[in-house]
Amino acid sequence: MSLATLRDSIRATREVIYMNTGFTGPSPQPVLDRINEVLVREASVGPASPDGLAFTRGLSGEAQEMVAGLLNATPDEIFLTHGTTEGVHMVLYGMQWQPGDEMVTCSLEHPALATPASVIEERYGAVSRRVEVSPDASAGEMAEAFASAINEKTKIVALSHVQYSCGLKLPIKQIADAAHRQGVPIIVDGAQTGGQLNIDVRALGVDYYSISGQKWVLGPNGTGALFVNGENWKDLSPPWTTHAIADARANPELGPPKPAQRFRIASQSPALVAGFTTAVGLLREIGMDNVEAHCKSLGDRLRAGIATIPGCSLTGPTSFDSTCGLASVATEGWSPAQVVQVLWDRYKIAVRAVTDPAAIRISCAPFNVESDVDALLDALRTISKERPPELKPEAH
Ligand SMILES: Cc1ncc(COP(=O)(O)O)c(C=O)c1O
Picture 1 (cartoon, rainbow, N blue to C red):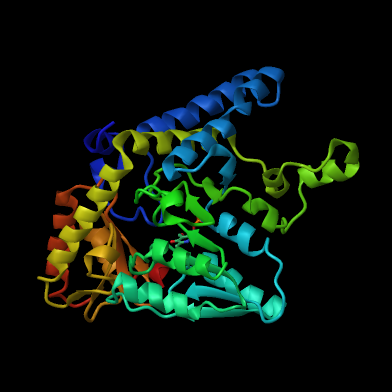
Picture 2: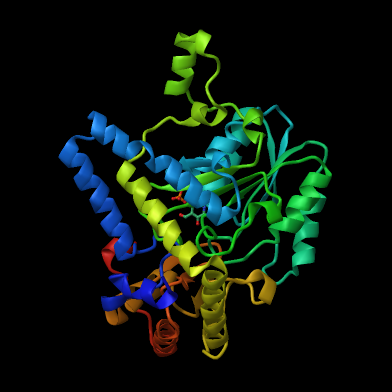
């Protein structure tokens, strides 16, 4: 598989210019085929017949192994989830919070992390220190800002690797090192990085890393994975009761369940898990170094082009170390929703609107090409000279 064959295998590249992978990525044909194959097989022999169960039993292990290879973890350290949010919640709500305990996070976080941080404050009397970083700060300055927020009350550092609203990439390794110097673990929300960056959880030195299957990985909705470093499971209690906990209570002679099993509350679709595995496999075949470099180079082309359009400006980082394939652009006199509407109605270019700061967010994914970026730049150059349209009722 090459970047070119990946593009050819994605239907959305034929009729539209799809630049909203940070929301949900379009799946390549081999992923759709794999999902269909598993569904048909299950339907043919019966999903829970002896043959059906034998067929689907191995699919989770296969996915754990594939994701472990993506992140440089071991399969035992990978827990399959239904998305990034689930993994983040398992960790944050799996900790024992006391009044006065602190969490260090970033002021730009997605609700997937920002909301549990607020609920933990309200529920347990804990305190979240929301570090404000300027997208123009250097990696060293950002790391320093997080390091100085950590103190003896800090229980965890929790933040996104790439901030969803503006594409700011945080210096996770330096922040993890600063946290560990004070004996504090770190969880990373990797919704915008899993499948976009070449992530090495060992090199980053993180304790927990949560990714989505349906975004940059280009897998199906309802899939994802949480990396839990080595023995860290023992520091967490499941926020819910599960089959494994019930079985262990009913049959104490069998001993405690495996740590990760205690967290498995919902069953997963074998077909979607298999599709997730295939999607990760395709990216690994292309090579995550190639994927990361491609997304970043399209992002650089976009950023350079925006700088030449009067009335358009980047709301995110411009310095090389903090940028990636995700970028956000504000258009003077236009609301983000108006830009999204015209880009789609007139040009069939799909992007999304974000707030804080208000902008359109553009995802330069592995299947996008330079002509996609150029078409978007041309469209923005044209519309930025016009008056914005009335918003359609559904856009409000
Ligand atoms: C930074 C970030 N975290 C979490 C999420 C939610 O991911 P998921 O739907 O996989 O839980 C998103 C996107 O929707 C995101 O951008």
